[in-house]
Every structure is written in structure tokens, then in C-alpha cells.
Image (cartoon, rainbow, N blue to C red; front, top):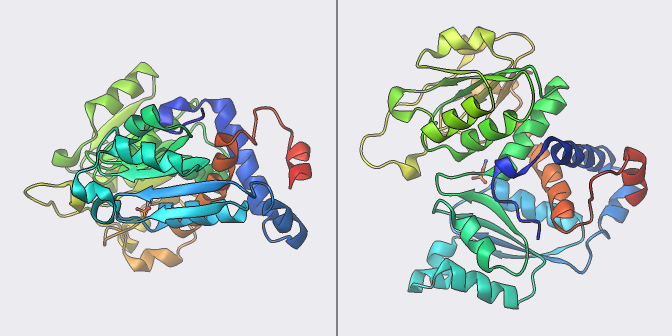
Length: 319
Ligand code: CP
């Protein structure tokens, strides 16, 4: 089964295949004939969207992606409160029961690290990790990398500035894993010392010979970056003192190169000011939009409709 559990599972060939397919779907989306054909690709299939934590982008873009491919969608939002989890049912039992209702794929967001892996052990259908606690958010990393490719036309030989709450931010963790698969990339991590990136990520980067450095000085790091990946403080995962976030505003924007791309997984809670939004380098809303197309391609791959090796001509025929 093609579960999607962590960024490390993707190799370069598969990433490029997914990105090619996502770009094909995006390019042809507004063509009425191709859109009709897309809507028949997975007709009769069903996606279960199982969310134990809040979400706007991931939940809605997976639902929209599935429906644009002709799938039906069954959803549980706030499953921590409104599912039988509230009565003490284990995740494993819930997943086993859901599989009795014959989904083709389960998309799972959960508040505990490793939850998607636990679900995959007992699931009879592929599980897609839509974020597990402070662990990973691999589909976000896919759309982040796709956006970098889309905006800069390359995903190698880049200097990334990854900043914010790096101790608990799963999107930053997943992107660091993914970017290490391409040559010539280096990372500057920017965060308060208390929110610095974990040793597991640093060890992975060292093992894959990806140069990285850490600093608390955002303004020093900004002029060098090709990509600025900014993240919020994970208030829901903090116990005790909440640190003031670093705020990126127009003064910081002025320090960036003209062709730097500014990304954020969203939601933001003040760490990028709204004045920044109108700058062409601010790509975070385009980034969110890209997510649906990447997730369409990913659903196709998980359900074995997308196999390594098609040419773009083949894929155009399909839709
Ligand atoms: N980026 C992201 O995962 O957003 P949501 O929490 O709204 O899904």
C-alpha cells in the first residue's frame, strides 16, 4: 500500500513525477473538457478526511482535490471532541472501524506524533499523514517544494532561510527533510534559541551533507536567502512561556533580494504583516492554492493511477 507518512519516503524521481502531474492538472484545470475528464478519473472512489486537530487548508484542499477527481468525501472534523475518541476509543480501533465502511484512502490529522504510522499499521487502505502532532506534515512539504519549483524554476542550488518556531513546527521539519534530497541546497535556520530546530533534523542534514547554520539574527540572514520560509509560533503545542514571534514586515522585505520568494504554510498569526501581501515576492496565497493540485496528484499516486515513468504527453491524454 502506498501510505504517505513522512517526507523521507519520497525520492527525487517520485517528487518530479508528482510535480509534473500537479502542474499538468493546474494548467488544464480551467479547460472545460479536461476538467470534465478529471472529474471522472476516480468516480466511485471514496476519501475519508479524519481530522482530530483544526485545519482550513489541508482539510478543505484534500476534500476539493478528491471531489475534482470525482471521489466522494466523508469527513469528521474535530474528531477529538465529536468522534468516539471522546469516549476513550483508541485511534487503532477507530481506523479499523472506518475501514469497514470501505474508503479507498484515509487522510488523517492527529495531535500525537507518530499517529499516522500507528494508523497505517492497522489500516486496510492507504493512510495520508495530514500532520501528526509535532512530527511531520509531508503533504505540506510537497506543496512547499512544488511552489519553490513553480516560482523559481529550480529546487537545487538554493539558500533557504527557514524561520520561526522550529522546535515544534512540523512543516519546517518536513521541508528540511525534503530539500535535502536535491543538490547544492543549504539552510539558515532563524529562531529564538528556545525554539531552535531539533537535533534529529540537524543530524539528517549532516548525514546528507546539506550545509546549515543557526542564528537569532533575522536581518543578517535575509539578504542571502533565495527562499524565505516563515512560520508561526505553535501556540497549541507550547506549555509555559510563549515567546514573542519574530515579525516580518516591510522593513525586513526591503532586505530581501528582488527574486527571493517568501513562503508561509499559513495560518499566520501576526508574524508576517498584511502590508507584505501585495509584494510580488509574497507567494503564500499562491502556495496554498498549489496545495490542491499537489494533493490531486498525490491521491492519484496513492491509488496507483499515477505510476513512475509517464511522459507529459501520456498524462495529457489521461485528462
Ligand atoms: N498549512 C496548514 O496545514 O494549514 P491548516 O492547518 O489550515 O490545514
